[in-house]
Length: 356
Image (cartoon, rainbow, N blue to C red; front, side, top):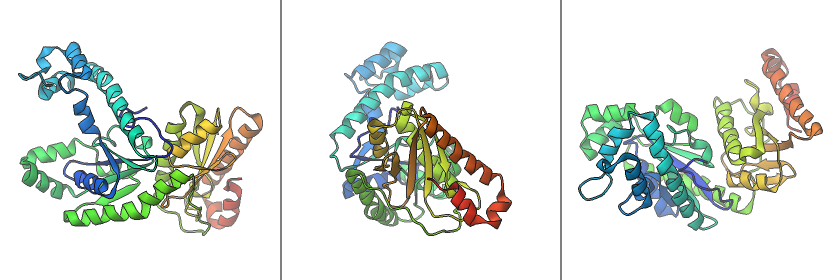
């Protein structure tokens, strides 16, 4: 489990919030707090677990020596950085000390949240560390590089060169867009960003949290529409979440159905096939915690009002259900390999690849 993510709690909607330096993540976090979210700051927890008097600081000193302390007995972060950042083995040793403590404290804070809470994990390096699948939704705030450089210069006193170097060292827009379920553009005044966050809260996050609390899925649309450019990227994000929360119960997750066929007009819904090794209530609870309540035997849907999805769970240890898995995947693969037929007879292809 990712140390910043903490444990899964079925009644709590857990979001990941991230953004590059100078993009405006703090404004988003502040606004969500004002609206009623429980915001958990990963950086703050990372500092707390190595404060003077903690066992975390004692472990760091035992591993790296007294030279990592300043004159007041607190952690000298620059000194520690010089030791670990140029040495992969020492950096991994440090992570082995910090991550379990960060994870434990994060889990405590999640457990303390109300059952119907929207818990927001403020994680600066969420994309860089590949943590998006640990959350039911990822919110990314961004701004043009020149705007971010100006903010860092004016608000933090950085030189232009230092600001650009810090930005270049982080994930690029392509990586962030691939991870983002929600993209907040912050090129203007703080008030405009706050308006975006308020709309997100009322139109998506609150209904999403209510659906998770009540175990309700968003109805899947039936109207056939032109294929969206990002539908495969969206499906990969959802599939990754199911794989992460399912853990050892899940053998694989496949994007199937009409939406998995390039160029095929289809309803705007993501169909996912889960081949499980131990389906049952435990797996169903895990899927609910990721925003996928059970809708029937072996079936789940998305609780996200903005992203309908259908999930079919089949037992890979059952010979009969393993054959169904194989048939569904093979039908998808045949359609993907025959774009001419997709173009000539889309209705027939949709019928052939539709989930049973």
